[in-house]
Length: 123
View 1 (spheres, rainbow, N blue to C red):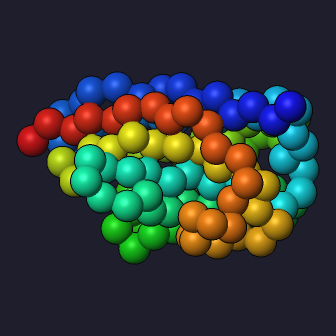
View 2 (view 1 turned 90 degrees about the vertical axis):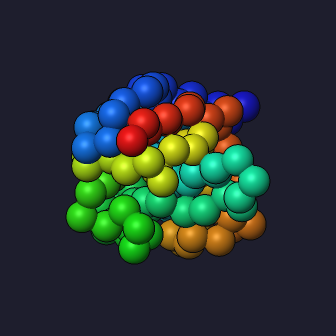
């Protein structure tokens, strides 16, 4: 059974940093794509950052490019999201996703989702 467990969320002031982790079990992240998405209250879920687990190519949403960094540790089956220069508008529930053969920001492309970790940025 595939399980994705996020951690590292919390409350931070604008300009601060957080590092999210996603530990995958029952799933090999040695192929395909893994990603981070977020959903703010009243808004649709949106893609934030994606990484091809074989090769490490990354993709970022325009809103976070230059501030967020996605990385992976295949030995630990873990994907990270380093978030620097956080803004109030980054406040959302952040979800880890897996199971997409190709990296895509389309939510329907993904099979497995974690339960999410809350990030709250105060201005």
